[in-house]
Length: 421
Image (cartoon, one colour):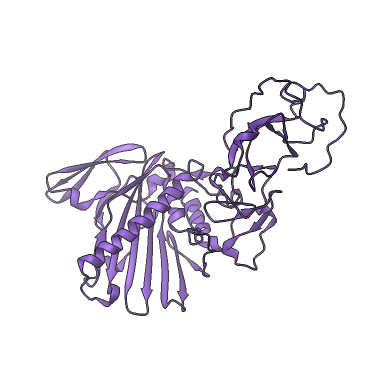
C-alpha cells in the first residue's frame, strides 16, 4: 500500500537496523512477507495494533487498525471478499485505504459515515522479504536494508483502552440488581445449591419451603423457574413474562450454557438484529424503542412475513424476544444471564411456545426441533460475543460507532449506564 502522502527527504537522522529513528518514528518490521496472505495477521508497530493482509492473492500488503469501529471486533477474524476486508461480525467492508465502503444494515443505498473508516499507517512497504510499517511520517523514504540480519518485530500490543466506562461482570453496580443463580428444580426442600455470582460463592438452602442465602443477601426468590438473588436492594423489578404462567404455553428449557464473555457483551449479542450470518445482507427492520422502568421495549411489524416481533429488556441481564405470527402461533425466548466471575457468564434460556405449526398441544418432535434450533442460534451468538475484545460492555456511546440498526444496543448501553451511575 502506498503512503498516504509523499515521504519527505532523507535527512541526517540516525536509522537503526530496525528502521527506527532516535525520536521513535521510522520503519518497523512487522512480519515476513511470506506469512502475509489473504488472512489478516495481527502486528504491532510503535505501540499501536494493526492487521496486515493482502486483499487479493499476490497483491501488495494493506495495513489497517486492528479492530472494527462498530463493535470493536478484532479484524484478525475478518475475511477478504472481492478485494475488501470484511468484518466477521456485521459484514462491514473496507478497501485498501481503510475506507468503509459498505455497511450491509444500511441497505444498498446507505452511505457509511466518516467515522466508519479505519486508521492506517503513513506507509507500508515490503523489502528484503519483510513487511515494514511507518506509522507516522518519517524522513526515511524506504525501510533500511537488512544486510542479511534478522529483524525482530515488536510483540502485538494490547488494544488501546476506551475513553469511557466499561461494565464488566464484577462491577459494583450489579450488587443492586436481581440475578439468576440456579434452576429452581435443582433446589429440593432440605437441600442446597451453590453458585458463583459477582465473583463470590453463594449457597442457597431451602428449609421448609423458605429460601436462605449464605452469605446474607437483600432477598432471594423463586421466579420464572429459577432461583434469584439480589445482593443489595435492587433498583428495578424482575422482568414480567405473562406467558410464563399462561397454561396455553408449553415451556422448554435449554441446558444452561456458559461463556467466557462478560454478560454485557452477551446481552448485546442477543439483542443484535444486524449480524451477518451469511454473505447475503440482512433485512434489518425499523425498530421502535420505548423506555420502560428499568429497561425498554421494542416492536416491529413484518407484514411481508406476517409476524410481529417484540423485544423486552430489564436491567441488568434479563431479555425476552416474542414472535407472534398471523397464524396465531407465538414463540417467546427468554434469556437470563448470571455474571459469575470476570471471565464467566452462565446463560439460562427458556422457550415458551403456543400453537407452533397450528397445534394446540405440541408434539414432542416439534418441541425438540424448536429446542435444537434455539441451541444452534445461542451457540453461534455466544461464540461471537466471546470473540469480541474487552472486559465488558462499553457504556460511552462514542467509544463505538452506532448506526440505525443498533437501536436496541444503544438502549442497552443507556440502561446499564443508568444502573452504573
